[in-house]
Length: 233
Image (cartoon, helix red, strand yellow):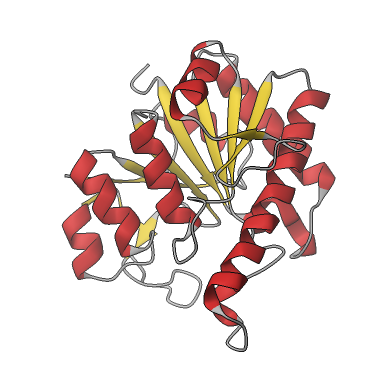
């Protein structure tokens, strides 16, 4: 097992499935089963989930940015609770932690408690991003990965890796098998925001980018058998 503890970044749109907005519960159960398969093999899995299927703060130019970001955090909590419920339905022990205290709904995020849950074989879902406005859930992913001492940050996307240009628009787009953090930043490749990339670079946390839509892809890429791109030093 090359990686033991992983931080999985899921976008809100992944949970929306073909609906594009809201939550597709059938798709959410499918994703939970994919993750459970890896957890059953012994991987310790933390998950940061986005909220773009409910709210995109930066696109709301008429609202105070901080207020808009807090609304987005509520979207991540809805997704975290839905995904947590999916894990419960398939018999996987799970805990939801949030970066903003809401004790009737979920645990407040405490690093040592999260690590203890992981050590006990529980999947831990992190909601509310970093708990502060102006930071994306990409940045939250790199922050939580550093805090829980994850071996790798795995970013689930709709494409099978990092390309030099949009593969949906350009037939000659080239996929990188691996690429450095510096090259991602210099080429302004759309992997994660610059803050997230820089933190992973500082903490030497590799980023593995893969397509979540293929059945069994998560297990394959963790075992080094699937198609993906690795961003590293």
